[in-house]
Image 1 (cartoon, rainbow, N blue to C red):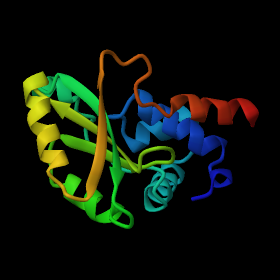
Image 2 (image 1 turned 45 degrees about the vertical axis):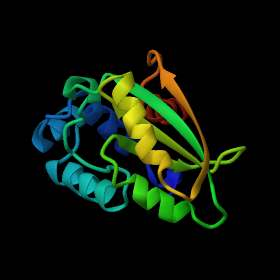
Image 3 (image 1 turned 180 degrees about the horizontal axis):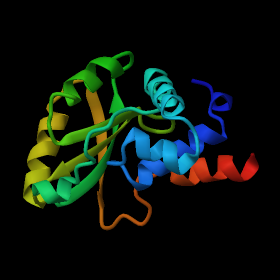
Length: 159
């Protein structure tokens, strides 16, 4: 979906769902002042086009016992990024992987139960022969967690 395909009603609906994820379609329609069918059609389209990626709970790794968050950059052998990313996906503690620009090729967010556990996970990551070099950074605190609300609010302000 192109950004211009999201209108003011879409943005208001998404902000409402972010604020109250358990709200029903009927209550959304009441609060937004539109028909229930309109809300349902919008939700279906936003989901079908990938704007809404899911309705599951947002689970905090810390609550699961993974209190250490780190970010690792990796330099990969030429042409092996996709294969490495696939193998990283097989490590449960690797919760995100991105192809990046700069001195490294991949960036991974890794969680662990402790620093000792993080060392075990890093050892598992670097066991891949296609990874040439890694650098790992332990996150001490999160000042701005993942969010999209401000983007939607900006869209509304510019409308």
